[in-house]
Amino acid sequence: MPLSTTAPPLSARLQSIDALRGLIILLMLLDHVRETFYLHMQVPDPMPIETTEPALFFSRSLAHLCAPLFIFLSGLSAFLYGQKQQSKADVARFLCTRGLFLVALEFTLVNFAWTFEFPPSVIYLQVIWAIGLSMLALSVLIWLPRALLVALGLLIIGGHNLLDSLSFAKESFWHIPWAVLHDRGWIELSESLRLRTSYPVLPWIGVIALGYAAGPWFTHATSATQRRRYLLRSGLLALGLFMLLRLLNGYGEQPWQPYDSTLLTLMSVLNITKYPPSLLFLALTLGLGLLILRSLERVQARAWVRPLIAFGGAPMFFYLLHLYVLKLLYLAAVAIWGLNQGAFFGFDQFAWVWLCTALLAVALYPATRWFAALKVRRRDLTWLKYF
Image (cartoon, rainbow, N blue to C red; front, side, top):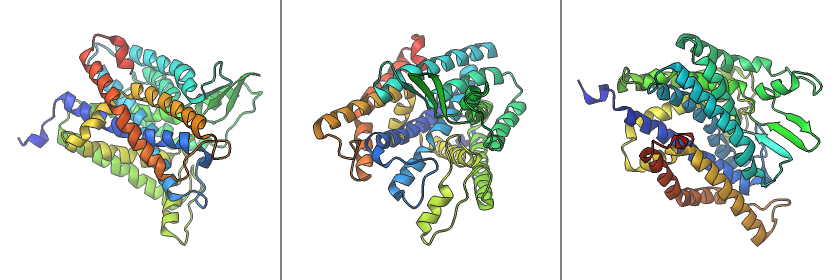
């Protein structure tokens, strides 16, 4: 039997997953450098085509890959974790513990990294919160048959845009649960504390469910050739759905429109909604992500992939580290140069965002590689698996 048709060791398949996580981390770093040093050119969701420079638009669009792929991989990793456990009860217990840990992390270390305010007046419930709640939901959903789990995940992703017009007044009992699930907004806890549900969680539950359902593709029962075929077909199907729905110019998205410039027309087509993620947003990002994962399986032995694997081996460590480094760099820049962009300090040109991202990736790589190696070396330290 040709080598390419046999299933590689589990560690090899995990390397491709870590490599994809590493790529996500670098794209996330780019977006967070933008949010730190280009905040004077903040863009809404979706972006205004006529007034958004292409470099900013496409950099922000690349970052759209981060949340969907990371949450999808969280579901996939939960399944692979379950392959080492005695029962689904062990997996459910881990998902509950991990989910609660992430929610607590969002309220504390993550929010403080963004605001440097204690006690906080605003808590932003962002991607770590969404992953945590999605894991809590998955701890219940894993008991469903796989076919039903797939159907439910697709139903949530495909149908949640039908609920876009539904909202509840602040006085309503349903205001808070609906703000958490689908309606991005503010929750007033007291006169001195507000919560911002930046990542409504309902669509992300569908994403993590599909990630868990894709887990059998990465077991020894599936050959490398079969897995790559599944990834290719699923990725192309998702991208085909995106193109079809975009041509129809409706359902869950503002219509795109042709411009005199081909570049602006392309930007209009790709201008999709993240908060909460529309069906088209998830079809495009997950479709691309599945194809990238397939490609990484083929090149994971290359030297240039190893840094991606190291970054992806310690994702939470890098997430916390880079947030605090960025905040300290921003405060240092303000202290040295002052506020040069109105109420902000910021770069004059977007090229500096790319340069800063590259320099930070190099600077933070040794610490991240060390921590990733520590996780492998000290598997007896249970707390390390949370990072």
